[in-house]
Image (tube, one colour):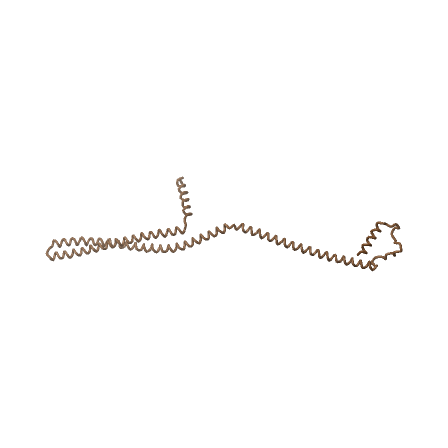
Amino acid sequence: MGLFDRVSRVVRSNLNAAVSSAEDPEKILDQAIMDMQEDLVQMRQAVARAIASQKRVEQQADKAQTAATSWQQRAQLALQKGNEDLAREALMRKKTQAETAASLKGQLDQQSGSVDTLKRQLIALESKISEAKTKKDMLKARASAAKANEQLQKSVGSLGTGNAMSAFERMEEKVLMMEASGQAAAELAGADLESQFASLESGGDVDYELEAMKAQMLSGSAPNQEALPAADEPAVTPTDTADPVVDAELEALKSELDSL
């Protein structure tokens, strides 16, 4: 394949692609109907001309036939008057007109066939145009629906669905974190409350034990303890020497117990 053929094919392919992309179905269909309407007008004009020509030939044939008949009558009249030469001339004229009428009738038969063919073609073209108009309306409706669908898809595509869904997912995750934080705070608050009640309950046991100890001390008896020595009896200590520091702590403890 030569370079010129390759370049020509590339140019033609690009032109075809450009034309195809520029074609609007609705406009093309309207233009096609207009072209068919123009063809119909031309066909009607052709049929009208053929019919008019047929009429003229028919009139000429009738006129020639009438003239032939007239010359026939004149030949008879001349012969009756004894003018044989005039009768012969009339017959010659009659023959010429008869031949003309026969020729015109042959043309008329041919034209009649042509006119009938043109009429059938005209009827077929009218039917085809009517069918094309119906089909055009259907195709235009389909083209409009396709355009609307294409515009809808473009609109939906331009909305950024991916980004929107990503935002929804982020917000859902954030809400879940907020809910989890709230639940954690509630659980922590409940645990602190439980610890407070546990502290109160344990503190109640200590207070009860403390009250019991105070009652025992006031009554002068303590369980599992030996009787204290009398005030006028010397206390028996492991060593005979007293420790002033211990005595001071003991007195302080006694003062605290008396103040309870």
